Amino acid sequence: MTEKYKYKCDNCGYSFYTSGPWEFYLDYEGRRKPYGSPEPISQEAKERGIYGLEADVYCLNCDKVFNIILTEFKKPISHITEMLTKKLKPKSKYTKPRKAKCPGCGESRLTIALDEDGGCYARGAKTENL
Ligand SMILES: [Zn+2]
Ligand SMILES: [Zn+2]
Image 1 (tube, rainbow, N blue to C red):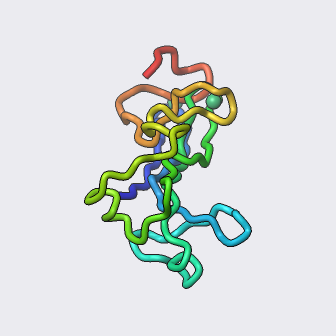
Image 2: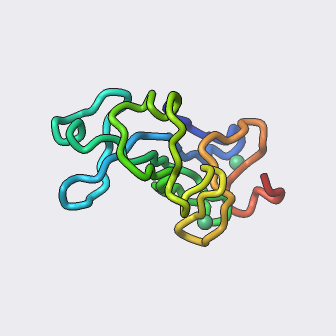
Image 3: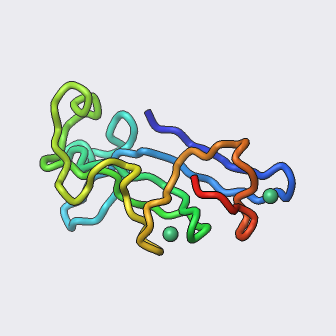
């Protein structure tokens, strides 16, 4: 389910990368770490379980890529397929990915996949909102 994207403008060469969603876990000290997709990358990851999903998203407003939490589960799950088979309720402060707020400006115009035909995203060049 995870994808990596590269946006590059054909006209000026402006480019950036986004990716996600990625599974993450919190280690015993509460630090956020990549879980591995779909299998855990370490014994620690396996023991901790999947805490939620994160992504590298692009904010149109800030013209920057941010790593943000998209979803955090109430309880860690042991495999990503549980997301599809069980009705998991995210913690209330996280809703749908597209509702995620930009940590830079607080706006929600964040995106993982950009339309290649959407024009140039270089600062100042993009005039319409997505
Ligand atoms: Zn351009
Ligand atoms: Zn922003």
